Length: 523
Image (cartoon, rainbow, N blue to C red; front, side):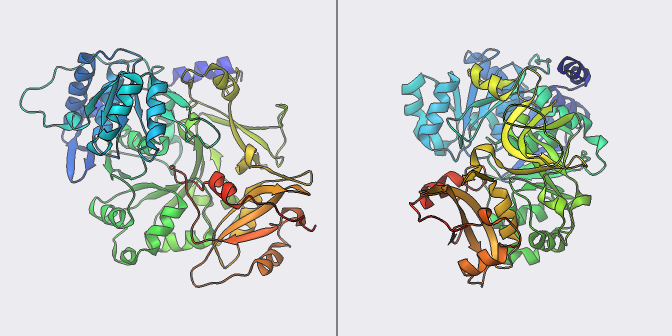
């Protein structure tokens, strides 16, 4: 099927706008809780009225369709109101990841050419910098969630075109300057309209999700949007804190949860975990890295729920590939090292550097064509054409392969591939081997400059508690598992791996720390 036929089929999907879904729930289940934050519960009827009032406020400040409006602050219920209010009038909400450095936030505000910023009190110190750089108005985020009073705001005429940009999310910038990814309502919500095709991934009005990752990240915002799409409840935490998360799961009877494996481990390691009632949990979705059999065994025993691995990017509105619960074997399996199968209305292709499709088992760049694909990058036409080709494929920059059954295995970022003595080594190959070592809690592999081989493989290991592994013995242990040229020349032991603002291992920081001139490595 060519791209024109694909586009026609996807346009035929009845995908509503995000704000229209919330208004429908406000009419059908007005008193149902939509958002809970800091003990404050906002019903669907209240959320709808707050969004109308926020939209009118934005219009009064000169916001027009296409205007970029920013939110700067930690997670709170005001972000939901902010996004829905902007979308109703065709403006584009841009929630920033609060973990960014101040200068990064100011640069993004300038890139957006935004006329209006909502900021929580903790971030009002940025007001002068933003005003000096771009002259934007700065309003308190509290205005969005102030009590409504008796006078109901006039309903705003809703934008109804699902091709309208619903959200602009900035990439983390690990491969360069952050880019504003434009996501339409169709992209953000399209897969939700067909989730019922997956028996294991059905959501309903009784579902409660908990979001603690920054809502300026598509993974967290997408979970909130998914809960509201199905008329469920989204509990928002200001930030991830282990004890608070454990308490919230039990108190709010959370059913659907998204976490990175590191966070799952942190929850299990907390002494209060054994006291928490996890019986409400139906499903935990994890991403950024596969889960080890050891951690899965612990998690199943403690949480007693189903596990799903997800893979996607900001450019694909978040997860578009998933490893179903049925493929999670507590004893470990080959499929558990993979990302899973394409979600509905999604295709995956593997191509060589020249663009030629590769066969099953051959590693190349992962391309994705999906109803969830972005519209492009804000003000970056050349970058958009490079990332989203004329046939509708997003070039992910990730390396991987498909097996005979259509399961995707992600090996690494293409740019992270290590070239040592003309041999290609994908960090995930090394990490997969060493993660099976009984003394390894976490591991990351990087390439560092080498005077003889060009690059040398280096492993950074977090030892399992109570162990003291020895580097050479560990290399010998792994020798039967991977080729000799893939074995790390050096193994560094650390107490923790650095993480990016999105919770992924910060390989750039590791490379900067451990890149030293090394003697030639033996083969």
